[in-house]
Image 1 (cartoon, rainbow, N blue to C red):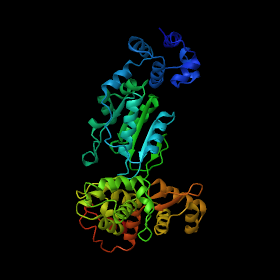
Image 2 (image 1 turned 45 degrees about the vertical axis):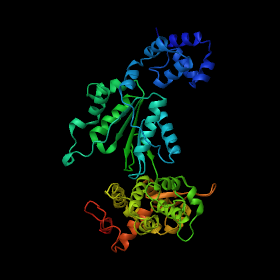
Image 3 (image 1 turned 120 degrees about the vertical axis):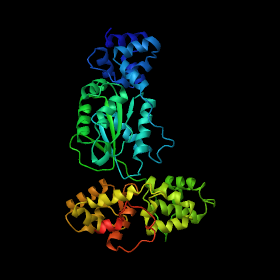
Image 4 (image 1 turned 180 degrees about the vertical axis):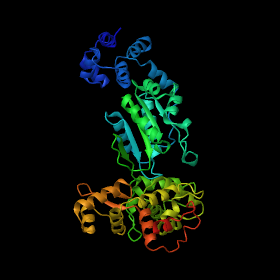
Length: 442
């Protein structure tokens, strides 16, 4: 029996009009009418499941409707694929970003999305959280390709090619046409790290996106590039942290979700009363100096094993880079990322950055006046710095222009390049054989 007739019969048995079914299922009346008239090609997985739920179809009747819509393969794929990695704790204060990324994945025209931002800003946690939610609530199969790391001598191992890895995950032949055929009519989310892809992989991925209209792809990356082939860039910025000053500490800073999270995490490591004013002030200052970057904050917490919060604050003031790496050297990639971002800035961007490094929080109008050049050129440089993640937004009063500030880690490295005096806090940290100050100064 044709799908349209089967859907119409099921609706009639349920005693519903098309309008009533639309209201209960949240599928539009027009879409229901087109489905019943077989004017639509292969129905979307989520659409069929919404309709089946609204019609209260179970057992054989539900299976019959889904089979008529060609969903048998999707049900098998959903059942066979492992659930996405569980996020033990939801990404801190990322509810808005999670909702926004989910909306993009549900919207047409956003099949390939690059989630970008500094190392340690929370991209992996956000992606895992969104993928897990889609898997649980919308029964969307998720193909998660684990990070494979760099290939020896810079070569790309043929056995680790993207198409082969997807084929192994869904159980089909590794030819591009076979993989595309297996995914063509289904809603599937593919999660991968762009560092694992070579040019051939990127081309294959674009072919898959063109042939498989229900395929959604989340690529994690730390690189900001202009993509002219249809990818959507989703930038994850550092968490909002309250502005802080040693001269005028703000008691309200303790109400910040980030500061509260840090205080809660301090309890097992710091036996003293974390509610003491001096501790609150120190933790708020550390959060501000580390720009609300989650991995940097976690690394700073690990130093409470040997330092008091007040001492940690002094280190953060002198050298925030010192606290971005844990005692084991983990997360030192954040400093490497900043150095690389500075090294790839155009000359005009570096001039702009140098003028803004010592400026208090500024609006675009303030920055244009400070730069004293062409307004359009200044705005282009500011937009580029923001896109690269080298400046962050400062919470502004509603109705007033947005304010921004250069990341404290960037400030420290730029100032060190100007005046490369020895930094007593940097000596124990491994920088892969290169000191950030020496690299910037060269």
